[in-house]
Image 1 (cartoon, rainbow, N blue to C red):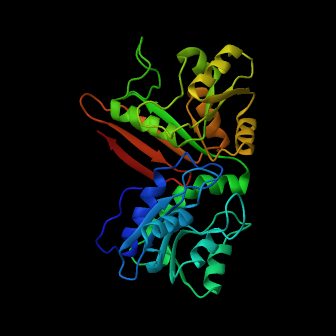
Image 2: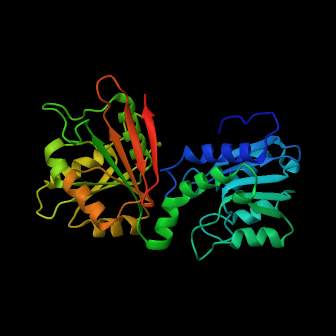
Image 3: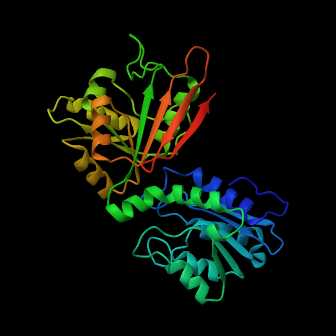
Length: 332
């Protein structure tokens, strides 16, 4: 993690640091959630900042506490600001509640409650019973928007925990006329900033879902190129191919691009298989027929439309959600 600032931080600023730290590892932690943690002293100065980086490694709270111990500042820990409710159960690592209770921390601010109904509230309850002041970010002045960002960070984990299926993000690029088809001889019509966004979406996904038509028509790589990928990251690639049109050799060649590719008959089976394998988020990159099927079945959780700007106008992205919310981003 970058060196934290020396100036005192208020709770919203500390939570923002934790969110940004966690966001750097979205797409690397499956089947665990993406989490960030910032430790403050009684005066609000940052003692340590860390994030969960990969399943089997230290959780964010334990990593931050270890960093504070290494710096000789663990004895000054007063407030733990964390994007997700600390776990209170043994898994591949010990409970984060135990790590927190091993310090002199007196306050814990939680960005989002654990979305897994089997454990929700357990970590917060354990810390409160131990005498710590535990609060949710929604109840802290200036943190409502940040709490929403924390819930967004953990949404893929919550989707899999409650349904067994991964969070589904759809990426769709449209030219000014509303067509998805690039000009003859080209594979894309969008700008470099738009392509970077597309690869950032791929970076944060644990799997890609496409159709046989896209594979046969475009021969896409589905690897991450325009942004730095997580080191050593392998993803799954599900190809909808009811008629067996994609050559087995193409699926095998995908392994050289760090993709474990397989063919499947339908979208539901693909999502079930990906969820069972631990995927938290799948990115749908496919043609109009597959996208229409995803939309008709209501299987998506986030729909990103990248629109080519007319003339010299910049491209823009519209991020849509099932509740009707739309966020527009200018890509320049």
